[in-house]
Length: 133
Image (cartoon, rainbow, N blue to C red; front, side, top):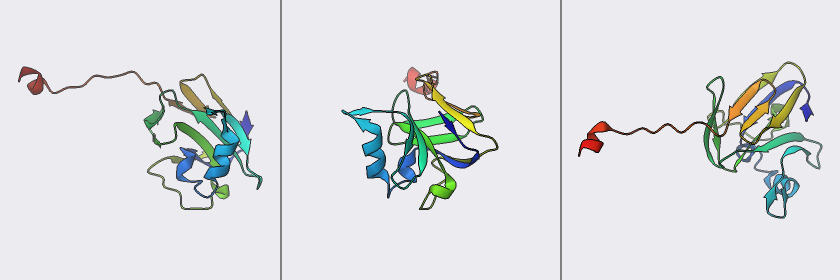
């Protein structure tokens, strides 16, 4: 799955495609199962959408950028194709200087040079004072 070079919003597309969200869902949902890959809206806008390993939450890419997720997916769409304000606190705007591939192994999502681990190792943290109480 390959997309052309350009400036893209990478994150949960539900935050930036409100007006198109019904159409996005119709394209990506089949028999209550979320399809993933590249899609094209009726107006010609192309986007990619991939499932996260564990649904909603907050994930990081290898550069430490964060991605908030409320639809169980992370995708990308050209910034020029977004018709509303972009909230960069929920996703990231990333410049791709060359055409790039979108893929997943079911845990790590790849958008060109951006790799997002949606199955990070669990780190147990606790307060030692609570343990002693």
